[in-house]
View 1 (cartoon, rainbow, N blue to C red):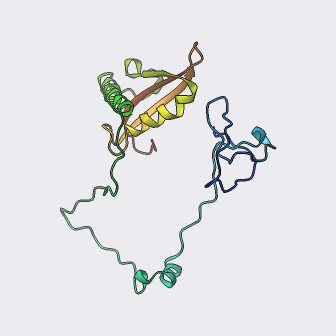
View 2 (view 1 turned 60 degrees about the horizontal axis):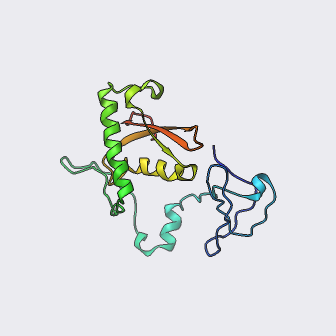
View 3 (view 1 turned 45 degrees about the vertical axis):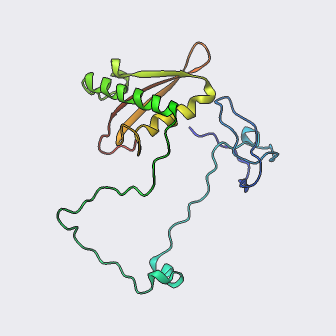
Length: 187
């Protein structure tokens, strides 16, 4: 579920951000002092604009000199040529907290394998692990779990699944497991 409001999107690039945070700890993405009318008192927690479709090649050829005379030509990939994805940027440095999550992620994945690679999250038994964190840290910790499965992470290409619950202390429980990617999933 995404928190949104009906306040119009504004250019917030050079303006201070609204200090309002919702009950989940998410901060309003609009500029400070925006109009506080409408749903969520005018606060907006996700800014989404229309994504412009790519320009047709014919139009690009008119504006970009490097495309003058270019035409598409399909060919077969030569045998033995690498088809792995090229990494065009360095992985961001991993701080001590991320390194801790990386180690925990490897242990969680190994527990999932040892449990017989259960398909259902709810029936994962000892493969389920958890963190108990303050509500304001929820999004950050989930991002750290996801980062363990991306470039530079120890479980690159694996899948993280999680469920959020409320702890009796008022903190947030993040139940999670790491598993193999399965065909047809976008994890």
